[in-house]
Image (tube, rainbow, N blue to C red; front, top):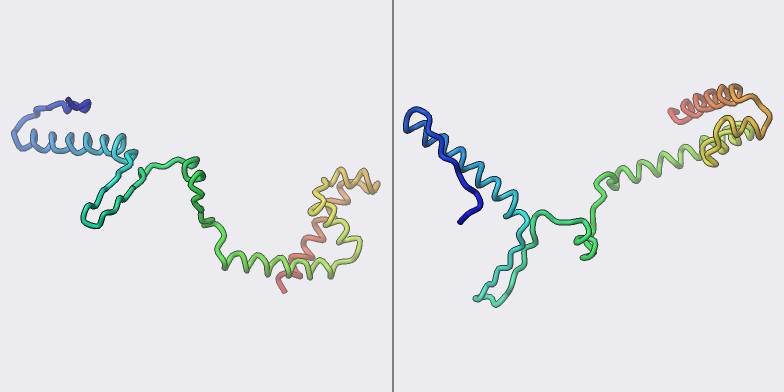
Length: 148
């Protein structure tokens, strides 16, 4: 006996009754598909070709795919975007070389060494608001250099 029991609803005429039962049957089948069919692995034996075909379930676990050494494509980084990023990094490097030593040192400390403005303030003895305003001016300068 199936564990999916379909309730019969009778409303008005025979045509509406058939229509309602058709919709109920459709959604009951959809539920069986989602709960069972997607999770079932299938093995098909082709006796004519003497081959066995294995079709894994369509709902697969990440762990099983890793065990099988499946490769995942990184859709976020296309070749075009990788080249574009590389070109932008190269342009940024060239623009950084156009900055003065003090400007470049400030940017390197804040962005490459990941120091905060307050940490840099304690190290250099310059007030953190001064460091912040210098950083903003340098970033504006870099923006203009990158646009040219």
